[in-house]
Every structure is written in structure tokens, then in C-alpha cells.
Length: 496
Image (cartoon, helix red, strand yellow):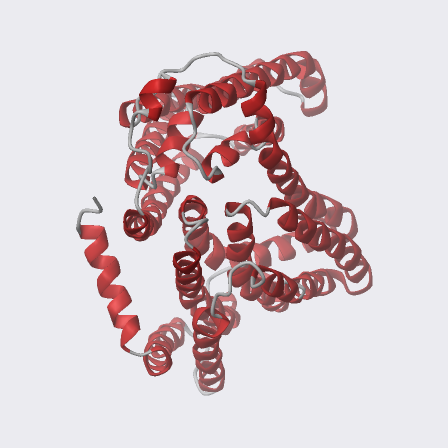
């Protein structure tokens, strides 16, 4: 197997193909989000008709337990394979595969041993117990998919990753809704989870055949672990900074306070989740392939940050402008009015994250994982120092303001990243920021003359789009139109 892999093309893909597939991958993943969101929304609507709230509650509790265990199913080896400068050999792939199967086995044993504790704490019924086991088995399916997924990501073949993901979601939704309609209750989720995992496993191997095998190379393991452990440590810090902080704030703000903060975070971070996450997923392997091509890396980083900022900044500012109207005109939504100020503070954090998240992604992709680790320590400490103190003193608004202060500290990441890649901050972030801010000021002034109704929201959105695109064309020029045309032609054309 090793000889077979090494006898393939020495250079996996050329820089031109990397660029072309990156654009196509971003567009495909954005389209995937639309499709998956539509499927999930429709399925959830039907499931809420056929299932009781208590059954949904058990599903979320059990899912949270498995998600916690799932964190320990990876020690960063998969990310290390994607980031690896040289093409992974058979020893690298099978060592990673073997370690992951061992970790998943240990997790399943831990879940089995801990079952009586989970049943006692959460009052799980026999159906809840079977669902927990099913989700545990889904971890096995997921781990078996790791290597084909890694190989597709290294080659930036996101078109082959998107199709299995869409089919998985469709199958899961159809199965869950069908069995819920038949009155199977919580078992609907159990069957859906198992069938989804099996279907996804078969599809990924059809799109990227790979012969699994158990093998352990101490040399490969140590080399991959040198990147993987810091990478996983960053993930742990992110969990402590975000999820653990939310759990802790619940003891300070109470249920209603956390409801307002959670609402503000959900909508305040929405532009990032919708636009940025896809770009980060695509550019991580793309930047890794460009590690030795400094000029290409500089240009691609500048353009990718620009693309994120160009989409996130106007969406975020537009959201902040129309939010006060929406909470007043949407039926039974005025109860969220106290969350509008926290939404603004969270928006500040989002504004900085639109730039700095891609910079930490760059540092990870070129192997500067320890630099990212230090930045994560800084953000975690600042979050745990500022947010709780401000929450105790000023409540929900104080907690949200704490997040905005942490966002301001991201300027440090910009200076650090520019030591490695001298990207253009003006072309990447300043021009879309200026266009969005001017748009926001004009819309804010206009909002004061409009009545509080949905018609005003539509007027503000339409005028905002016109203002932003006009300002962007003035500041950025013909290259904006050229980029749009290039993206469309790349998506429709062939990359190799």
C-alpha cells in the first residue's frame, strides 16, 4: 500500500488547482448550508408534532454526553494529516486510523461503565439507554470515515464531501420523521442515528476508496503528535473559553439572563457561522498546500479575509440596525428587547473575529500551532477574568460587554500574523469595514424617520445593499466585479 501511494503523483495538486478548488469549495459549502438548514428545519417542524418535549429533552441530554466523550476521540492526528507539508504515506494513515479506533473503543468502554451513573443522574429510560449506545456506535462510524475525509480535504475535493453530508442529513431526517410518525417515540432517533452513520460510511468510501488496516509506527505517531497535541489543546481551550463559560455564567445570570445572552450570541455570531466557517474549512488545507509559496499564500490570505469581511461586516451591521425593529414587530418577540444591547456588544466581538479567526487558521495551517496556543491562552484568561466580573456587576449587558473587550484584544493576533505573512490589512479588512460602517451610519439615521414595521425592515435592507455595493465598488474598483466573475466561472468550470 505504501508503494502504491508513493507511486502516485509526487505533488498532490498544483497551486493553480488549489486556488480553483478553494473557490469552488467555498461556494459548495455555502450551498450545502442552505440545503442542510432547509432539510433540518422541515424535519424538526414535523418531529415537534409527533414527539413530546420530554423526548426531545432526552435526545439533547444524551447527545451532550456523547459530544463530551467525542472530544477525546481525537488527539489532533487528523488535523495533523491535513496540515502535513509532505504527502502522507501509508504508515501515517494507518497509524492515525489505528489510534482513533483505540480511542473510540476506550470511549465506548467508558460509556458502558458510566451508564448506571447517567441513568441515575438523568433518569434515562431503557429507550434513552439504547439511544446513548446508538450515538456511541455512531462514533465508530465517524472514526472509520476519518481517513477518506482527510484525503479528500487535502485534495480540496469538497464536492465529494458535500454530497455524502447532504444525503446523510436527508436520510436521518426521513428516518426520524417516519418512525416518529409511526409512534416509535425516542427510538426514532436511535434508528435514524444508526442508519445515518452506516449510509455516510458507505458513501465516503465510494467517493474515496481506501483500504483500512491496523498498523502502528512510532516515528509517524511522534511526528503527527507534535502538531496534533497542541492543536487538540487549542480545541480544549476553546471549549473552556466558550462552553464552560456559558455553564458558569448560568450560575450568575440565571435562566432568564442566560436566555437573553444566548439569544444575543446566537444572532450575533450567525454571520460568522454562515459565511466564515466554510471559508476556514476550505482554506486550512489550501494554506497548508501553499506553505512554501509565500507570495501565493500572502495573496490567498488577503483575498480570503476580504471575502469573509465583505460578507460578514454588512450582514452584521445590518442585523444590528434592524434588530430593534424586528423584536417589536414580530408577534410575541418583544420579550427579547432586553437582548438588543447585548447583541450590539457581541457584534463587536464578531466584527474582530471576522479577521482574526482566519489568521489563527493561517498560523495552524503553516505549522505555527504553538503561537495559536499562546493566543488561545490569552483569550481564555481574558474571558474568564472579564466576563464573570462584569456579569456580577452589570448583569447580561456586563457579560456581553466583556466579550466585546475580549474581541478588541484580537488586534494582537493581527500584528503577530503579519510577522509570518505580510498580508494587506487595508485590502482585506479596512475597505469592507469602511463601506459597512458608512452604510450602518446612513441606515441608522434613516431608521429614525421610518415607522416600526416590516415594510421599514425591507426598505432598510434594500437601501443597505445598494449603499454597501456602491461604496464597495468605489473603494475596491473593478476587481470586485472580476472576483465575482472568476468565482462563477471556477464553480462552473473544471479545475484540472
